[in-house]
Amino acid sequence: MVTGLTYADVLRPCEKKYSILYDVALVIGGSMLIGLCAQIAVKLPFSPVPITCQTLAVLMAGALLGRIRGSLCVLAYIAEGVAGLPVFALGRGGLAALAGPSGGYLVGFVAAAYITGFLAEKGWDRRFSTTILAMLLGDAALYAFGLLWLSCLFGFNSAVLAVGLYPFIAGDILKILIAGMMLPTGWKLLGAAGFAGEKTR
Image 1 (tube, helix red, strand yellow):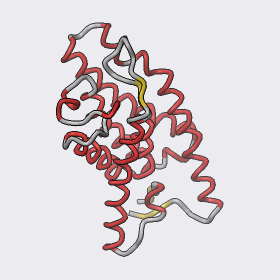
Image 2: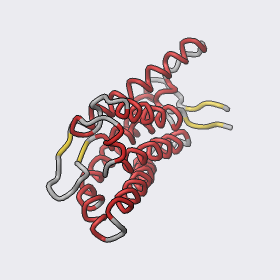
Image 3: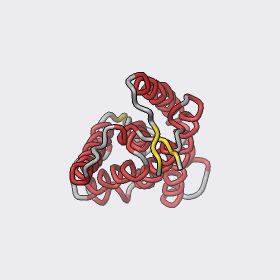
């Protein structure tokens, strides 16, 4: 079966020992990038969930690295935060942050990276329209977990949408549009450089 390569697959070494090191480096590097993007945050006076840039980092990790490495990046990031490193939004860390209002979104990051990675492996990141759709599906999974957890904490009511969804829509649209432009353009550049972008499994 012919399937699409992810960006990470293009440069992956063929030798097993080097390919394992390569994958580990990508997972650790990806988790660090998510942590850095989490620090670009704006605390909202009316919401317990801050606006951050980490959503874009999570979606891009899935698309660039594939479903396994992308979701492992997020799991590594969460593990770093739970261990006490200040990698969560606004420099927070520890198990309390995971159990707080943002906890559902953090779990949703894993699903978002997996979904976008899976679709990227199917070649959805080669065109603007399908890249946008892949990112929207990943984003929807993220919010499904986030809003469900907020509802468990504060009750099932419309106020959950007011503090956990509506303030983030405009920013997420911008992030998704950025990904929609960057990913297909990158593949065109790789194609011009002689990378076929396909493999047989």
